[in-house]
Amino acid sequence: MSALVELDRALKRFGDKTLLDVGPLALHAGELIVLTGDNGSGKTTLLKMIAGLEHGDELRLRFDGIEATERGYPRELARRIVYVHQHPYLFNTSISDNIRYGLRVRGQAPEERERRVEEAIAWAGVAQLTGVAPRQLSGGEKQRVALARAKVLEPRVLLVDEPTANLDAQARSQVIELLRKTATGDNCVVVACHDRELMELEGARRWHLEGGKIS
Image (tube, rainbow, N blue to C red; front, side, top):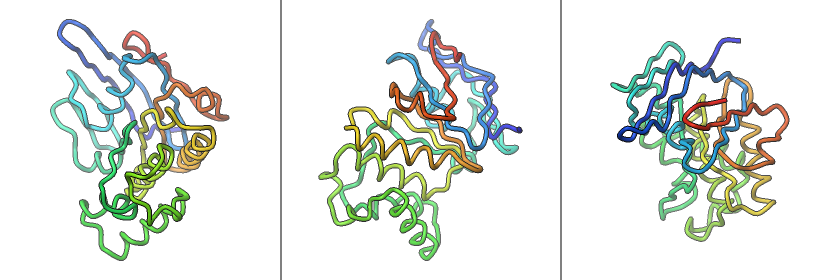
């Protein structure tokens, strides 16, 4: 099976300390990869480097013939690899506006934009929340809206940071099911977490980050 993303190296130093020296790694379509490691081990940094959101001392990454390095991260690559923050920020507008935001920034035609937003709302199971102010959402509801906001961008690689942290059992199950459904076909999902249920999810592949290395 050919790799969707090939990460030859991701290197990140702080002064004389090496936080990350990861690679080579391959991400394949249809995979759900669970990234584990202690707090401070560099999980978030690695995801953000893959997504082009954090600078590293060295980066060599390829996706569909597009190359990224520490000197430059192509816009087309940023459109295909999407990162979801552990504590997603929602604008104080409406749920629908939050979900369509990225499409508006990309200049998506209104008709196609609204079609995608409606599909994402149904997919995430948040239709009943569209009249609720974002500040009134629970942690699990915010995560589902954040995942819907990522889904409308149709990423090939979805990088999700601690999506089930501090959620109750029902909210965790809902978020895990959305992640499982996303890691199919042409898409790959990488989830940084400490969640035992995610780690033991059938078919999930596990990476463990320790001492700056993946095992």
